[in-house]
Image (cartoon, rainbow, N blue to C red; front, side, top):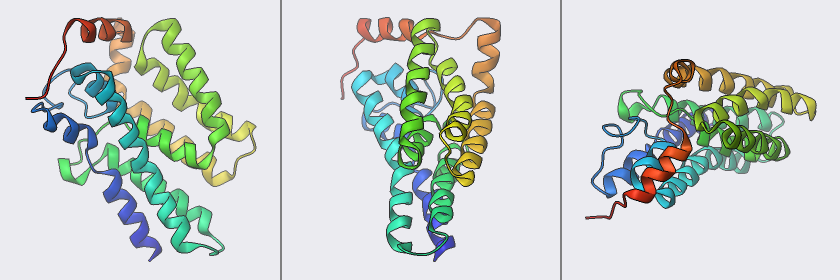
Length: 209
């Protein structure tokens, strides 16, 4: 059953919530904006409320498999390991979804949900780091990269378990890999800032048909 729970975690994580939200408003988020199925692109194309909805749904995708695994395994001695594996599988599902030919999002929101469950204090500090970076430099991608790099260090400093630390390390590396286009744009100074996105959203309002 343990392996089935990990597989279920992957299948839940692979649900393309951003794409589904976009389709409800007759927009394929893969064809517009950055082409990403995550909350940032949904926010860019459909506005703040639907962007936040996508963020929440992507976070929930990471939390549900871990809650289910923790409940079903109850007192099993290695329960924490399987809970972590279920969360990690959900993250992999989001960035490599079987439903979309393994072409998914960047995993930031799903990772946030995972670590809200596993390391809430580290998440609070990491969110502060994210907000500061985005406010000062204006790039959500830079905030995400900084936060994903900081999370393993925060878990280590807060004396989290070795398994949670390793998960944060793997998630951080994969997050950087998935952001390679953003990294190239940041280096070329071509990345779009969140301030410009907010201005565009205030100028153009999209209504459901």
